[in-house]
Image (tube, rainbow, N blue to C red; front, side, top):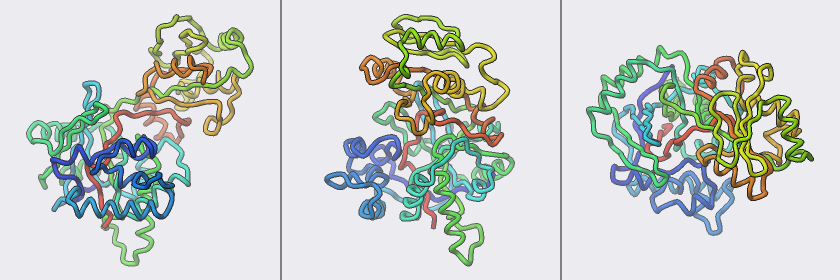
Length: 412
């Protein structure tokens, strides 16, 4: 893999917690407006919040405001560019567990050639929206989230650096997640990191498929528009935080369905029994404890569903996934939901909200049934990416999300 250090644009130490924000795609405009303090990066990544009433996020006035705000933050000293190229370390802490990522500039060619591997489909309209933001700012304002196979030497470098250097930033965000950030201001270490990554065969998009595609495509655009292109220009790279595979944890991504396709709860349970061993668990929340075991909340009760042998294919990287098992045996066979990407009868609930959220949505009458899934593993994601397969929709949920605004990568 080809990566490089870069001169990041980032907040002074005392402003990091104020400037840094949640990513653009985890909160809507109303939530962003309520959450954004004076110096928050949300004014740059969701500038529609600066209009009253909130403006159309795709309007030219909003794009112009994004550019204006990025310049203003730099003019006011809320974002300042480092005077030399370097790598950075970004640690996130959630529920007592910490993961350490390398902040680097990833290479456009590695994405275009497939060495940076993806496991989700991207939509052209969403790609183009993100491309506009990269073009107008001439910068990657928000990072993408990559994984790579563990390398002992890299783990040791990061561990030693963290132990022996004070962080630039160290704060707990309002959501309770900790964010700690170091700059690697050592040319020898930075050079060694670049060399280590040359021997890594692949990196994997964990979160941010549209941002990754957009960043790489804008880099390719700039290359094609430059008659004197050399391959060394900054636009050949984009902002990524790269975590060793072993440190990442994928959490569950659950489903709620509006109706039982005309069946009574008793009839629905009877049809489920053809493919699942069913145990009634009562009113206490039931969390799946292994692959092919599901929690189901129906008519005021929790159930354990275990798919019967022969109803799934553990030798197929897609067939082994519980989202596939549930779709085949329940959503297609019994509920006839059709394309889950477009069906209005199903909704998806990230595990960060807890299984109580599933129960709440059924008890309210909004939904008829809820399914709790056992989370996929990083190894499953890598197997799918390595075999050129694509995950079913709404399969992976990574938490904590990367905080935006800790560092920005300029393209020129």
